[in-house]
Length: 454
Image (cartoon, rainbow, N blue to C red; front, side):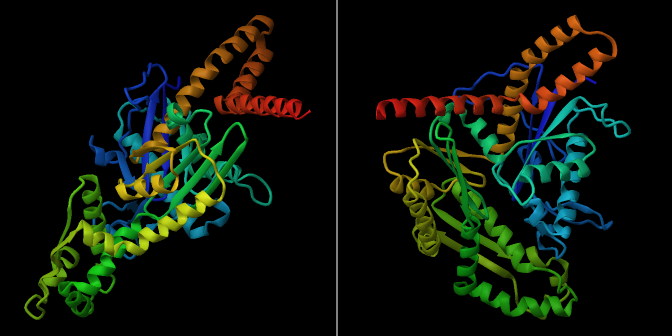
């Protein structure tokens, strides 16, 4: 069956998204210089919320794994998050969790997007190819016996019923930002909930440096929650009473503070997205305890965990002082490593934090800084790569097909057509061609340097 679409999934450590391209369509650049890449629904519905899902699972009522979506899911003891890593570093348990999550995503995309056709009884009978980026590795990573990408290829070949083209995170990001960083020394700073990742790429020098810290913006909600626990009387009272309520109602498995954390994370995201001047927190006890609170409501006076807790921006800056200092030290250390970017691209995979941008600009002075916010940057980048690769390979395949059809016949023709198409798909890619161009440029630059040195 002809493959009309490329389904492009980014399995992020915190959020998973999916984009696609129609290989029969023509895409033009928008006014910002990007392709308007269409998105796929992962959840049921046609809203922004349906097009992404947190990389987290828990057990449903039937005992089977399901997406963790509701606030109640994030307080369950069987909740599983942060299971993506290099295959060699994953425990067998996390490999099971990741396998379950991948299959849930694949099945949900097929079910919730009518343009896609997939025959469960004959997986080759489908109208799309699958491209995937998985967090936890760089294309330059190696282990004792091969490159890390080979481990992932083997893993996905077992987990999914169809072949997968793997794209590294850095390649997907590079493709997304090509209008700004093509052939430039570029520093990408990825702001995630748990981590901040740095990718320094200098194509002409043939140098790529990948590093990161554990100081993601998830620290903001954690620091605010810790501050609330220390200063808010309602929170202090809740900490003294709720454990007793949970024990008496036989609900000790409820992680009520995780409910609170998830709520604060949502409010922090709203605060920064909407540039509010005050962070307002109101969280009644029944949000976390539900029906079990009703059984003992007369015995315990516990109505609110947070009540009219209004934090102005100046106070918030004080709460986050230690976290801001950690980031300043991280960026200074990066600067002092001697990298010399021509452009810095700041990528918010969660929500925009204006003071982080100011911090970067103050440390990397006189360097152009672009900011981009959105969960779809990587999956869109994969789609842009898939589209560019198809455009690049199509005339090559056409020419080889013409020659083989003219010069050969019968079984030999069939063998050569299949072999050459497979070889082109695997080896003659747009990325391989660009790497070849960079190698030529480096050789020429070296020859010029040696000539002038004489």
